[in-house]
Image (cartoon, rainbow, N blue to C red):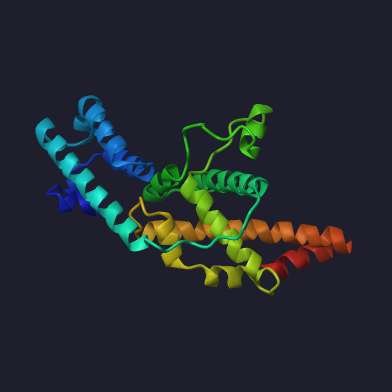
Length: 244
């Protein structure tokens, strides 16, 4: 938490719950009013217990940290003014499918992950609000007793929509995986996650997620070509490998 040190705190002041609290709060940020309403409520209920500090000092440093975060958001918004990430035009159903794939990727990576920082980031990229659109694929499958499905945060869905845009430009080439990964812009990915500190760990996680998504799309493309060309099972395996 570089920002914590910026406002005069030290890392040993923070409990593990404090780090999770700030990451989840900042990743779901929507407006200054909402942020400071949250501060007013949590200042009574939970903020003091997040630090190894006296109550008054913990509230003072938290308020300063919020100010630093808002300054960062304002700077990012100013730098992005007039600049927009260009995404491939997708239908609503295609966006729902990408959202579903995003949830699948989160679920798989969370089960395999052993890095505490990466686990925290995966949690930040998960939407726990249960406010999915009723017509979405995730909502439909949840309603049909398929069990609870993981819902990705909007920022992760936007990342995968960006990867999908790149994939559609590269899918006529050989070695799609290599072509797609080399075509992804770290700057564009960083802009998508403007509410998170884009450190080395987050960058590596984003690239891991992107690679996972492209791998799924290569598999889908191979199956589609298999059905069109009526290739044998062995040929299908070879085709999937060549697409990667």
